[in-house]
Length: 199
Length: 169
Image 1 (spheres, rainbow over the protein chains, first blue to last red):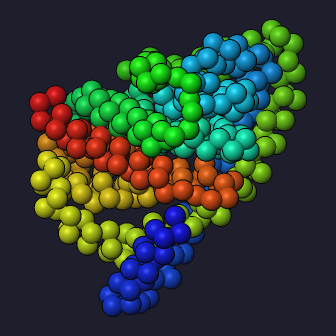
Image 2: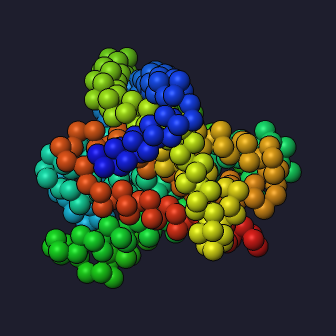
């Protein structure tokens, strides 16, 4: 990340020097502005979802759900940490349903919990699954196409679902492939089956 | 697709209903959860700010447009319409930036055109990788390059497949 940051920073800075020196600080401030605005809207989202998650937790539903999903999740993330697994399952479910803003707080905590036990594999896998996000319905795109006067705004549903299914499976498979040296205790065939069930 | 909008209200109704049935003090419990919102935001804020400032520099300097122009032959070879290459390039960095690019593409080529559909699929099937990285790994001491590379590669492969599918689906 440090390398990417430096590379993009210096090349953009050089471009600004030649084209528009005044624009440099303006662009940075615009980024800061966006961060401040986004933080406020994130805070609003967190208030709602963190409140909801606490109620979900206390109601006992989440422990029921995670008891069902645990055997699969345990193998998938190579972790015995119940809390982390519950959070990770919640994160994936929220992603799939496309609940706006809900996956992030769960994902952050699950990643922290994985890393606290030094389970980098679990954290990496969760990150890749999130970053190739499998979503049932691309609501933003459909809304934008509707606004742009599309005759059938939802007709990109199938290609999008197939493309994102493919990217999620590919990403997950690559994480498993590159983490080959760690012991899993799960056969490749079983792993594939677990992967398919998750997707 | 009306049933989709029922998911969230029903989810809240069921969960709060079950909680009430199990004699959970809803108000106390909800506020207890909200209490964690500010610390969570504070923990990710520095990374969020750095990424957004970087993505602002990336687009405003014209660097993203130059790289997109440079990559045009590669995109054409892979079957991605070159018109959507800025979108594919900006999406990993910035959600709002790529949303703006998507609306621009819809405005200039039409939402139902092949290019418009490819753009929609490319937008919908990829994610803001660097943003997620910044936020999820805010607590990690060392950030590793491998998962990022995997995520970027998988998303790109998804875009290629999506553009291909758009030809006949």
